[in-house]
Length: 138
Image (cartoon, rainbow, N blue to C red; front, top):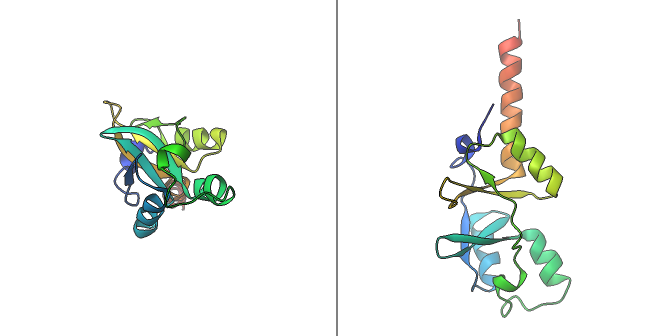
């Protein structure tokens, strides 16, 4: 069974943004990296997450100005995180239970090791299924 530490580093680039950045700054950084979320940092500490959905629901639907609204005003602060030694299956269950698509993964020092998307976990599950089938074909 895959652990999250096996997946960290294989996912797409993690975008880290200061909580003092504007929404436009975060959106540009996410678009340039082709990722759906940004980890919001206060120095080395993870303090929030900001996603494409947040842009739609918290900014555009409320007609807020992307050039003046700071990430700290609209980021998700109540974080659901996982540890490096958790299984990919446990992470999928956690994401499903909390209806989230991005999961920050913390190391033993509670520092951000990476952010996994549901896509990363689905890819891993497909690989495990393919490996299982290959082992049991006769």
